[in-house]
Length: 321
Image (tube, rainbow, N blue to C red; front, side, top):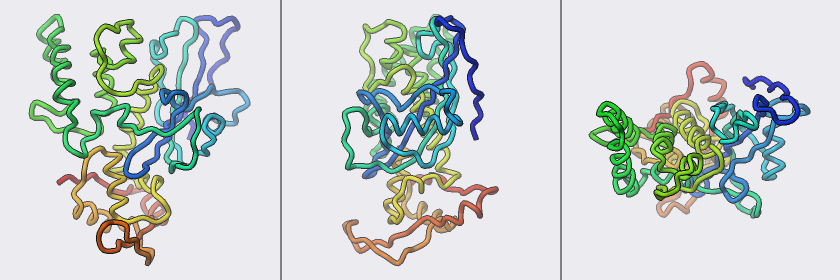
């Protein structure tokens, strides 16, 4: 349900107290085992547009902008977050801009090619988030070293300790575990430490090279981080992952999709046991033989799960080896 209210009309002439509301979509698909996001421009922006008076609702306005900019119709969407920080755009003296963001789940149309929009892997924007092959080299080689230096730059010992403790919690070092859900905390910490390009642009400090990771306009990468964190959390208790699956699939394809979203591997026997215990899927009677071994059974999502588990929720935890 739309929760944000229609913005009040600002005064003519671009006064400082004018308020504009943008609708922003984070549209996610998983293609060939890789999580991807729908972008516009030079792959540096999310589909978006202003909420207008002729829009029937926030959701209808969002759908209209996404289809206009990408020709991609939206299926499942849910409201993500409303961003209204005063300095989020960097032009607050002219107009205050709030962004009402939505998360959409779909399947990528791989036949379409366009110079105005496209699909890009979300680990291009957050290379430190993909731990499926172990800890990425960027974490110890760049992040730990650079975050240590940032912590040491603090004026007081307490501040140095606070900075380093937050970095250790966010990135899972100093005997702490990696928490895949802390996507936003990690990005915001890197922004605070001026290690990402968006922070350098906002503050006019471009002397020190940014860490790897494709930047985005304004705070669109922060919004994308928020969506990844939401999805990584949600796949553990609601069956939203099936919005990203084809009508029929193998259990290995389902496992690879969950791993792609979580950015880490799961224990295969435990994962299959959890799927069976929750009674999430049913066999179709068909098999496929392109898995490199014996033919694998095809399954489909049991739609009745949605009605059966409305109150209790559907447990789909990320089980680890």
